[in-house]
Image (cartoon, rainbow, N blue to C red; front, side):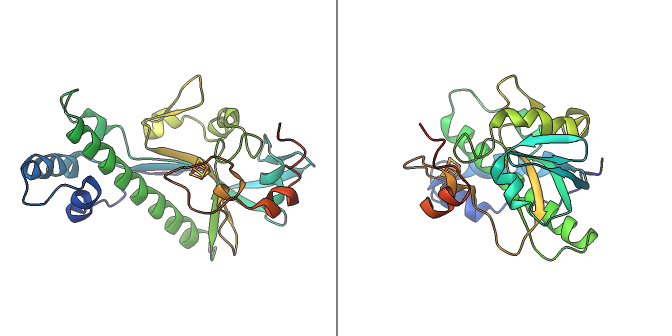
Length: 231
Ligand code: SF4
């Protein structure tokens, strides 16, 4: 599988201070700068992906390459799409190896933000790589476990990782028995060509989610035949 492990990443310290709400000249600023400096040296966001074709379509599932995914919404979104890009992107294991005292909550929080920044750099780099390499104009993506359970169950991570080969060897990302990823700042899913960006938040009932990017869309929920399934 193609592995991207030379992803450019620079830490935006202004943004780091802004997100931690710490004054750049305040009491903890030197510690944060020191952490950012260490992170800049070791950070190595990575991505692995596959270029696969949709090989079969069913009402409740879709087969990509040799792997079948159980998701009516994924099948519907991939209607008319032939080639897709299953992927895993991660901030990399290196940032978790920077020593931070267990009780230093501020620095631990800063390290998580830096990890998020590294992950974002990885996602942007992968998307740009795919659009350039495969001459695709616009892409969007879906991830197992994102949105309500029926949208694309998180257990389908196993199928996704199976499709991508030895993800651990290529990126350091481990899939736990609960289908979560370590490092925690990793994302997986299928990127596919689309004119309109798909936000799974529109199919998610979770209230007060700080990461919500779009309002719940009842019409879209019905359109995908999900209304009858919710208990
Ligand atoms: S609302 Fe929150 S939990 Fe639901 S899909 Fe969006 S980001 Fe995920």
